[in-house]
Image: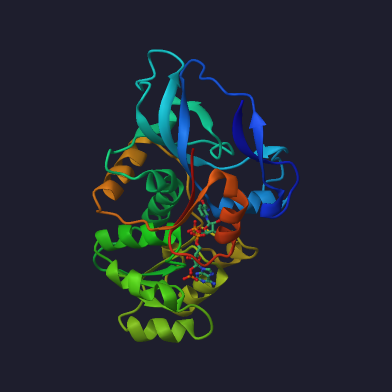
Length: 304
Ligand SMILES: NC(=O)c1ccc[n+]([C@@H]2O[C@H](COP(=O)([O-])OP(=O)(O)OC[C@H]3O[C@@H](n4cnc5c(N)ncnc54)[C@H](OP(=O)(O)O)[C@@H]3O)[C@@H](O)[C@H]2O)c1
């Protein structure tokens, strides 16, 4: 037997249970990974707490879509992965467990210098930030506004845009401003008066927007005269369609892309703070922290 996080009714972190399940094994084309870390994402608690968020999602459900660990079984000799390899990868509603079984194409080699918490927490936000940023194609002539820049997607999006030569303004709580400045982001607080605050720090105007926080950023973007095709929101909310803006989020994951991201984080080229880490047994506490919605970077579970 092995342990896995599960829930059998919708609700808050209190519905999460750490249960004993039969040990899974790797079939052909698959690998089994002994999990060392697993990232938490807003998607997890949105699906868990709201029965309408993913209507066909069956219960009981596992939880967690990204992990890092050590390969301890391979389904056949053609996987290109060996027992003992350190990897990071993705799955669906199954990462928060002692073992994960995935197609061998869903793992990437973990650089030796990448720590376990980071390895388990960068994949989903990295993929989403890449797609969300590419959707507005920032370049040296751009000043980009990012809503919710202190979150996982916001932090990577900011760094991608800055690396593309853009100036980045980002909305965040005051407590996160100092760190954001170290990345080269110009921080502004969100809330009433946002448009005026952005105008003050960007008199040249805003040319593109990535929103990871909600309607406020999209409305500010429109008030600032940003072209609708250069506004992208990854937060679905009623009415987004009425604005005619883009809604390009994560998807199209590849091991090649994950390898590149892992190497960039390992080398320090990209930064993703770990806001908090918890043992698997404290999964409820970990989600309470995540669901407080005010943190800098990622929350991860650590195993064994
Ligand atoms: N469509 C997709 O494919 C896709 C993929 C991934 C994520 N998402 C969604 O994108 C959102 C962000 O994801 P994430 O993983 O980056 O989340 P996260 O790491 O949990 O981000 C939380 C951040 O939100 C900030 N925040 C809270 N209230 C805010 C407000 N009113 N205005 C601006 N920022 C605010 C907080 O910053 P402060 O501490 O500074 O307040 C915190 O840093 C989530 O809703 C998630 O579900 C969508």
